[in-house]
Image 1 (cartoon, rainbow, N blue to C red):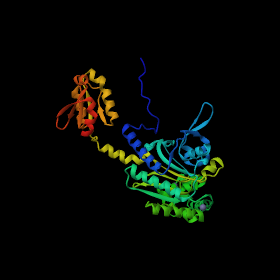
Image 2: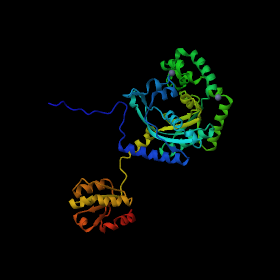
Image 3: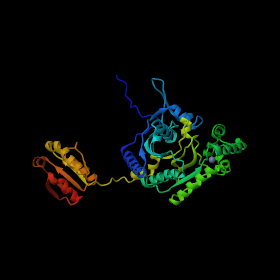
Image 4: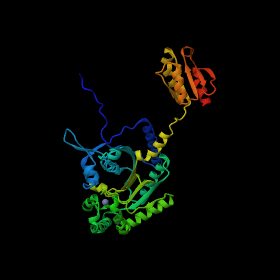
Length: 422
Ligand SMILES: [Zn+2]
Ligand SMILES: [Zn+2]
């Protein structure tokens, strides 16, 4: 007897995006693209697989991402690759590798796609995330930071339906001023080493800036009184940040200064920002990454960018859509009866498609009763009834579902007739 077959299910932390959510995501990306393109951004797609060294050098060995969150794989040829965990390092690599310094600067790019983090799948944590992001490469001026923030702000406002979110902002300084700050921060935390959580004990040794990321209650009071980076910024970093705030003020973009916002990656400098929901959930962010190009190539290339987590940004919209269980009524439903009519039905539907008249149908059903039932369930205003006689005579019946009145029109006149009605 053959063994009982069991379905091979999807991998841990993976998710099928079903039609309803797919459509929402596509609409979101279309709107986001339109906003980015208005401001002169162009699309780019980098590979899903990159060499592991790109991230170990760019992001830093002692970060959570590199230590435990990367999907590593080895090809048959022995090449070590990873599924991209984030979008910025690949885009900077692509800029350098494709000689984009010869184009007019700055180069402004947008992207959309999946990113992968090998997170513990508890609490429904996903391992594949869709992001929409923008990058401005080759510009040091604060106006580039403001542009990135303003665009992401507009996308969140106009493409997600979220009204209550806040923009949190900080400057993490550059290599020089951060060195002093890190020293002060480490000294301060050492004094409290005994009351820190396990993670912070480790961060203190490997990546002190990340101490400010801690969400544990036991560390909260220590974090509260920690020295603030803003007090350690050098003159040029202070001016860069001041100008950014002035531009945001002038453009009517509200923000909060958040001294705990540090983005613990080695390649960040100066501007750091995050978009946070009322419940404190971050669904997007970014910052300036002037040191990144030098870390991965030895070349200097200032840059700033940010991204939005598509799934999180659309969560409320999706829930709302699900709770409004009643479907939007449709205008036209096409019904066919009999073999001759069924065979000709795609011809009629093509006529409607070319005339841009949206129409639903249920071509695999044969009885008029079952097709009418679907039409009324969908709330169709008009049904088109196409039977044997109509197929022979090149005509079609239009039934007004509300009044139950019917009219027969010539097939050639159908689309003009419908356009007038709807
Ligand atoms: Zn902690
Ligand atoms: Zn500085």
